[in-house]
Image 1 (cartoon, rainbow, N blue to C red):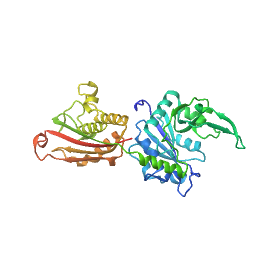
Image 2 (cartoon, one colour):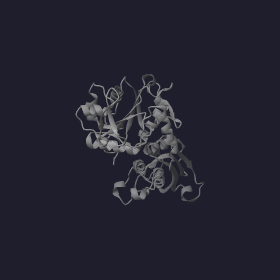
Image 3 (cartoon, rainbow, N blue to C red):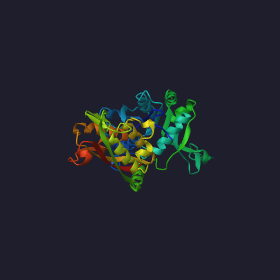
Length: 387
């Protein structure tokens, strides 16, 4: 399975087409599906995916100067480019803007809004191993090849027939080679084949349908409405003693203060409590199991990094963050000037929008060690949704 620190993976989402077969006044990719544009569903799938580092979206030219607001997602860098006359032109325009650090590029049609995170991962893994891979559905019906007059020319072996879909993933050198070809093709895998590269097939999901007609849109609506979301709640708590000679780190922010928190790691009780909350909700253990204080590897560790690793475990368990609520209980210092930065650090580690993270500061009214300014405690609640 994918490990995010191995390679840099960029995604290209192709949304530059006109969708003539779909009909209607609005461009197909902006038609609402379960209350959100089709394009937003596709983009959100790649924003959530932990194996994707950044995204380039190819849009119709008239929308590039003022793209939809949901393409300005702080959880992951999204760039917008103008699409071309052909699909491969749109991909080429987007590829020219892909991060220079990219090792692998995943291409996906905006019109496949129900793509699963598992399918994205499996396609990326296959491309890492073989150079190029596509999601594809094995033919279930008997396949006939027709003559121009509409009669059967031959019956093909259906066990050899696959229907090509997206995502399609390529090592950068393979995609560059494929896009250097000028002949027309219906997808990048065809260009890669013609350039002499082997392309692997990855079994797709039945729900990864392409919205081409109004009937497809109705089917996608039914699939979304029939899916009952799995919701999980987890709680986290942490407390550390304040001592001299250490920096005070809360929510990834170093706060000016005469004392810091005593701990094996950097003592960031905010990140520790949130880590336990998301691990608990995902039934994925606790912070002590993942990062034991008996292991020298975690000595003075950055707790934002630990939270990021816990978020990976959460996603591996099949969950995404709906929201996180944090209460920091400290007599001193005043936290309000630092709350926004703390929310941003936590949201970035979780891979979610900052609007999904709340941080509040409270005092303990002079009661017990926290109220006496000898310690800081944090409570956190996380709501997760199955992906």
